[in-house]
Amino acid sequence: MPTQPAPLPVTAPVPAAASGPEANGQATAAIRAVGARATPARIQVLALLRQTPDALTHLEVERRLGPLAGDRVTLYRTLDWLVSAGLAHKTTDAARVFRYAATGPAAPHGAHAHFHCADCGKVFCLESAAPPPPALPAGFHLQRVAVDLHGQCPGCAAEPEPSAEARP
Image (tube, rainbow, N blue to C red; front, side):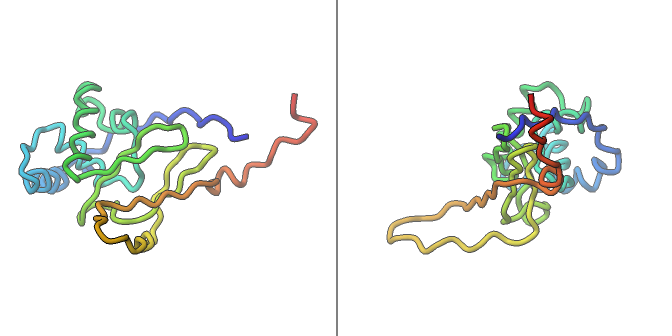
């Protein structure tokens, strides 16, 4: 039976270089390209997502941005807006926690598959492209494809099973 996911580690705020003028400028341009206002919250969150190789939870975004994240409600609204605007995508991990990643040509998260570890709850972006979608019947129009694989990550697979003597 899978164990409960471990608590999220406390991470340091994003270093100044990661949220610098170039990253913020690219995030601002992407937000304006979809015809929206580039608010400070949208800029900071999108810049972080674009520079992070993993999908992040709301809490991880909050911890990495520190005071730049603003309040929790604003952060939730910002993440949801980025998803609805097509600048980020949202996936669910093994603990049923939403994770967010940037989308688009300048982002590290393109059309690829995700691997969900059933033991630790982490979500990993896979380097290879997702397989092509199957042929659709007449009248169907594809909007997006999400490929989610589930199993054990190398760290969890390497952990030995508890022996019969160690079990209560």
